Image (cartoon, rainbow, N blue to C red; front, side):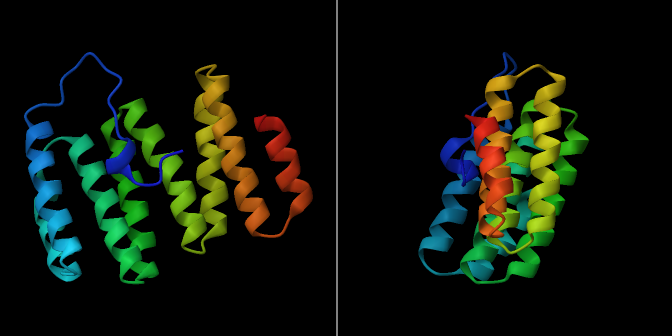
Length: 167
C-alpha cells in the first residue's frame, strides 16, 4: 500500500494523462522544493493554486501533496478535510483507478490522523469496490488496512479476523 501518492502513483490505462503529466511533474518539483526548504505555507498556497488543473488525476495527486504538508505541520484538522476533498475529486472523476488510489490512501491517512471511523468506512468502500469487480487480490489489501485500523484501536479479535481474511 502506498502512503505517498508521488511515490506510488501509476496509471493502468491506455489513455495518456497529458498534458497534465508534464505539468504535474513540474508542479510537484516546485512544491516539493518549497517543502524541503521548510516553506510549508508557501507550498500549501502553491499546490492549492494549481488545483485548477482540469485533469482529475492531477487534482488527486495535488490533494495528496496538500495532505502530506498538513501532516508535516501537525494540522490534522485540515489534513482530514483535505483527505475528504481528495475523495470527492476522485469520486467525481468516474475513474475507478483514481478512486481506488484515493480510497486506499484515505484509509491509512484517516487512521494516522486519528479518525478511525472514517478509516474503517473508507476501507469498507475499498473492499466493496474490489468485490464488485471480482478483484480478490486487491480486496485483500482492504482487509489488511481494516486489520491495521482495528489493531490501532486495540480491537485485536477484529484485527486478527481481517488479517486472516486478507492472507
